[in-house]
Amino acid sequence: MPEAFEYIAARSVGDVLDALADGRTSVLAGGQSLLVEPTLGSGPPCPEPPLRVVDINPIAGLDTLTEADGVLRVGPLVRHDAFEADVVGGALGDLMRLVVCHIGHPPVRARGTMLGSLAYAHPAAEWPVVAVALGAHLVLATTTGRRTVPAVSFYTGPFSTVRRPDELLIEAWLPVLPESTGAGYAEDRRTTIYPQAAALATLTVVDGVVTGAAIGLVNAGPCPVRARTAERELVGHPPSDTMINAAADCAAEADGRGQQAFRVLVRRALTQARNRVRTGVPAAEA
Image 1 (cartoon, one colour):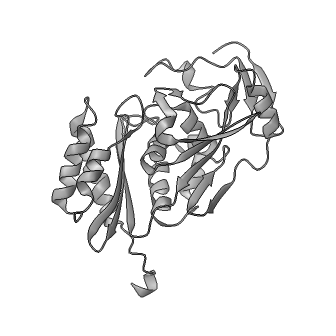
Image 2: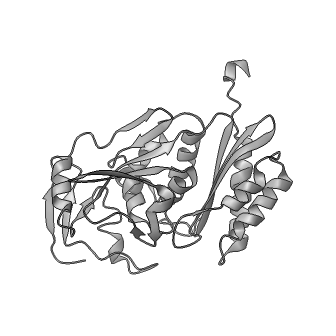
């Protein structure tokens, strides 16, 4: 960490975009990775410590969560622990609550932000895989306009994305999951910071048959991994133990380092998702 760096307290999004326009400024939101992790000296190579920082915390209105037209929109100052509450209904809300309780520890969840995690692109972080597996879109802003990038196209490697130095990740759009969908999440954690491996899963089941599935693998490669071939194993079949085991075997092939770990985790996540499938019938009528 350098002895000193230039600090800018932004008062508006315009201030942030003006500061980023020089191409050498970093954004400070939660600060859990930007100012801390580069000093740890372990794991994959981290980005260089910042020389110039623009702090977005003073800006009002960047901590909003809104659901409309089947999309949950997440602002850049939404902290991890916001998802411990029922911020969105159905399986998406279930999945967010399942995932967030595994992120770091309570002080990290109270300060760190979802969008900060998405932009930082740590290969073992949970939120990037959630975004990729669910087909989220990420909105990037500059002084000249905005562009929207599918999460699957956002990541290019460890700590590497298509975000340009002059762009601010201003919003994430996560699709609300269909009715009759269940969510599951399982991980292997040996430290309090990041999991060694993890898997998330969603299953949509109609009339006893899987009509949609998503499987994401955490720390299975340099970028978030969506196990699409394993998902196709499930669609069109009942979510039986046999089919779940077959999908878990298939998903494990997506990682060449720890296949058995991912086989176990995917099986656990899929089983949990199957057991949490929502019928769409209100509890009083069930």
